[in-house]
Length: 147
Image 1 (spheres, rainbow, N blue to C red):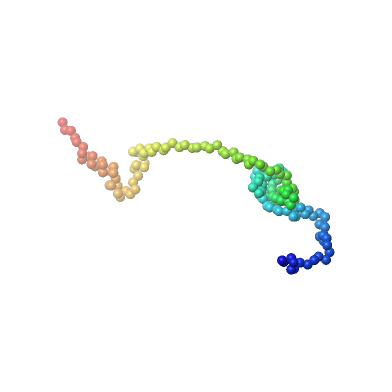
Image 2: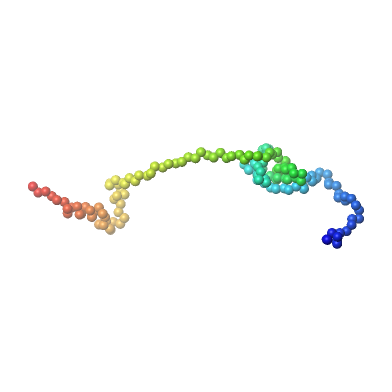
């Protein structure tokens, strides 16, 4: 409906596009570019697939270009990097688990002559100590034999 109403017939028939200038790569311009991180093991994840970069580079980020013809290129700055698709994901080596078993701690009370035993919180209440009470009771209970 719109084309019938507003359409205009061309003055000349044929292709009126200008040719592309020399030195311009239309394939690299007319592609889908995606910025991806290059991992420590030189792999790139793109479209749920892993790609191993074969060139040794210190890049942290690379540009993945999906071309119109279906090919793919991984580029760092102006350099094209060699890569291959990884079909099986490498397994991480899990470190061997080590368990620390601690023996149950046995409580050993300090001996009677230990300084902790002689510690008094407040000397003013010294007459309330358990030891003195028990010793006073025992003195009254002692029986002496008379012969």
